[in-house]
Length: 92
View (cartoon, rainbow, N blue to C red):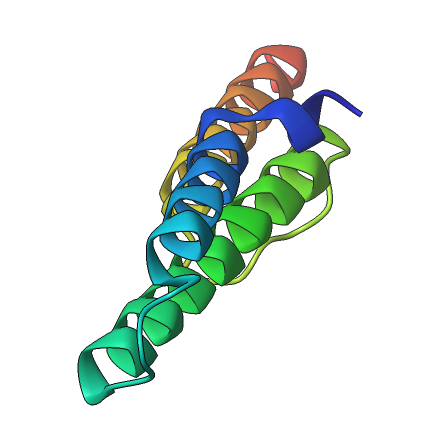
């Protein structure tokens, strides 16, 4: 639930509201279409980031192109290193 109130999603929603107010009486031009396309991309990225954060918190893998993937890979490498260290100590 807290992912719904992330700064990216709140920012995208407020930008959409501002865009809607600004384009309510304006004619549809190529600039308006680009503005709405840009807002759609921003919203999609914000939702995708929230989904990746939720998946990472639950320990599920995230896509390799996600900003969270690098952190998850570091954590996996550290856990593997710690596991090998424990196995080596137990072998003594």
